[in-house]
Length: 296
Ligand SMILES: [Zn+2]
Image (tube, rainbow, N blue to C red):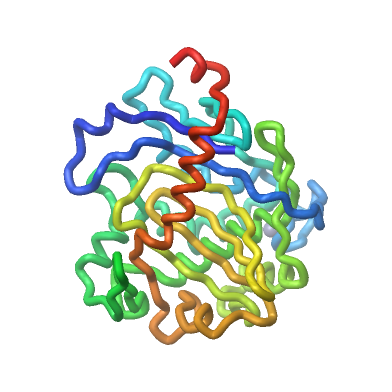
């Protein structure tokens, strides 16, 4: 699914960054259901603790996607066939309170403070623009995140891993769909890493791509198939995270890994988003508006 909400109200406040046109959440691709969790055991620490409601993407992302200047501030969800404007969020029982706090402290808080938060508010892009790139790209550059003091690579990698692991830890129901991403035999490796973040899985790599022209949209975790590996990705405003998992990861994926390469690379690239944006545009144009959107 995807959702969109025009935000012409924000254009009056544009300073350094372009305004956005759509807010989008796209569903996973169809992935076989592989794992379920008990509502009485925390999926991360496996302790029999009271379970709280966890979000697939942090609640803070939904707050960014709201446009409080509009009569209906809710983001637009765009699905396979329909779109609707709603305050509903993708959430379900998953973790104990301590593990929720663990996720928040080790990744979410920093990432949400430094992602695209609206016109003129994108600290991570500011940090990249102020740094010297390692390599130029056709449209952008590659940076050594390890050498940029204002970028917290550990938080970025932890956050990317936590979202993909969450997507695989249970089925998530939303807007008529039930979806679960598969980490296959590497699910446990990621669980152990999320408990003890000094041991990033050896059969995985993470790429972080910052959007030079940020868009206020989010894309739910989804899976693409590579040659001998799986490619999971998702987007929050201004940043797309790619998590590659498999025994035969190409050397190029490993060399640019944000977790384990010596430079801990970060991409600043429009090209990497081209296919994603084309897919979003097709979904927006092809979806049938429902509810209040039908009246616009
Ligand atoms: Zn726990």
